[in-house]
Length: 425
Ligand SMILES: *[C@@H]1O[C@H](CO)[C@@H](O)[C@H](O)[C@H]1NC(C)=O
Image (cartoon, rainbow, N blue to C red; front, side, top):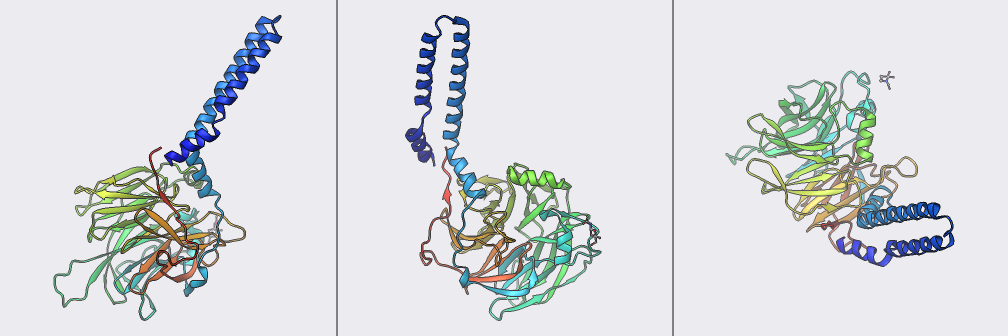
């Protein structure tokens, strides 16, 4: 990037030339208007000022050129559908599965109720609290091998269920003869406020047992959750809030305002901000060894890799990775991450274009592109069952869940790099 900026500056830098020409014409103006010295001085000053302003503008454009090009790529992309014929709709009855996480033989899905989602869904600027008397979103477990989808029964909670981010934490196994138990964490936008709800789930059962609802003024506009114990988790606050006007939120998004943060809720019940000034902090994933937290910053199109400190604070571990789309949820795969997100906010017709990418070794590879955004309508997640190389794609207002095969690096025709590490300018 730095070299590109310099190359652009040297090759095209017209400002010195322009400045010289203007100086010249100023001099000839001086000669011609020798009889009117006061007007001549004024004209000279004006031209000098204009030249200086032009020079500053050109210099600014030159130094910010990579950023300007990048903004254009992100906001006005040209998309070509790729590999979509390899995918099929897994379950047409589901709707709005914003988040999916694979653990062991199962995929867990947080899906929406279409009627309720159309009226009350704060992340999509739907704020009609009278839409429905009960918010009926639901959680599912999908057994990948037998292809069976089971709606999980909730025990111990009967309030609003307006689901968003989802994740699981496996309880430490102390007795190998006992069936593993998961803590299931889910972001719930209740009409009384958004919280992170925690359930216990015995793997293979059809039940979720309510443990607690973590609500805190610092959990403002929660989006994704990444647990590190049965109680402790990181959660991303996506935008201004908690009760921002729709226009405030639109401005957050359009201007990529730094109104977003990451919050940590500890085992001791305390909640604090661990990273702030972010531009739409969205997907989160903690590495298997617990050392790293990865974050998808939607509005800048960046993936951030943080080193986790013993006190759970976060240090940026590498330059952010730039993507050519708006990354949403992040899921781990053995050699990196899988990410899905809108390829643009609007397209011709009613679709929301989607990109599904694999990230490894500081590079992104676009495996799937739905340029029309019909099959993958504004997808937010690509969760991978690695043994079967199955990618499950869902989205907050997407019909059904789409299944696609994982595409190995080099296997795709005309594969190209979709992202690059940002250098300091
Ligand atoms: C909110 O939802 C209710 C019930 O569906 C409906 O009657 C009302 O018109 C909606 N209000 C708005 C502002 O859309």
